[in-house]
Length: 461
Image (cartoon, rainbow, N blue to C red):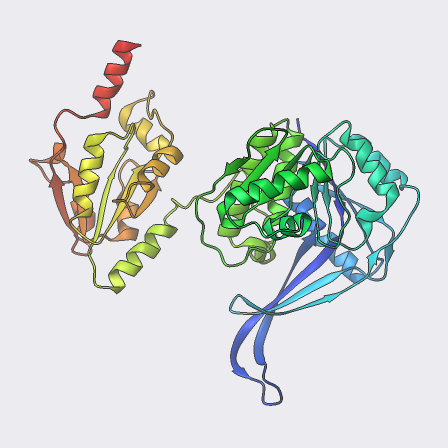
């Protein structure tokens, strides 16, 4: 069933003006940005609504919206799955403009009004609350979340469905009965009046703030470190994410909040929703953040989290080693049920050069090679285990039966395979010849094999 999500908060029109800056102005010590390209996108609560829709939810966005050209422009940027309920607004539609040079923000210009006041909730807002499977309050500190009528409406909703509150330093405290509050670490410090640094201190502060706010749970977003969740008397749960590359974190909080809300609307446990949201936010930053959304106006679903095993880490590693005159080594295989023989081969391969890239057969590729009962371990988990080894510098998952395309991209100096290939030419040598790559065979550690492990497990079952 398609979940119905209500996003309540202040929507904005975000506009990036990105150009080149290679000189200073002659009349002031400021950069001159040449030929800026304008990229508009939904911002604030509107971005959260668009991201929730990309996760497959039917979304109602209830937001103060002016009657002006910027409001029309913002509506046009929203996906068709988002229905807008316009609440009273004072002044024009909020617009946040960032001026960038080569992706670096130079200055931000904010215009627009604040939320209008009302004593009785509009009928269409009450209807949206009644129909929602979950509510996300995206507070951007413009007065909406301080309105008593809204707070009462949200508190009543929380008696029936999950309510997630994404706070703002200038906003109101979460409404009564809120299920999940989502401060980042700096917001947690303001709420607690402390400066927690270590993960233990963050956990203590999160527990104090949750108890004071009266929410069922509180999740602190920790940027590249993931998230920490406290609920009830249970110890804090920490969800560590894989490191990602990404310079623009704008919108990561909205990605986290939208993902957690949709997951709760689908019936996930609180811990499951927060863990998924942490991975989704990391993937959002890795994919370029809100800037990338502004470039193509298509948000990435949180179920489609970019993997750091997609070749980007390998390309960076290879480029760095080659720049220093080093030797690039690659090996490949299924590595289903990683065992001591695999580790010995990988360690030996790494000693032959200055980096080791592992080309890993995808699940479909393993099935084609090994049969319908394999793999026993999915590619994402196999890649994660391999990447954790000190001797492995990068992992690339490939879909074909043979890694020819991946080899062509990595272009290793040495291609290393296990000892069962001894006595005949390696099938990949023809590809290696295109750039002068060499192949070598390393002996396997005697008596270790995945097939043997599977057979032994079946005998003992």
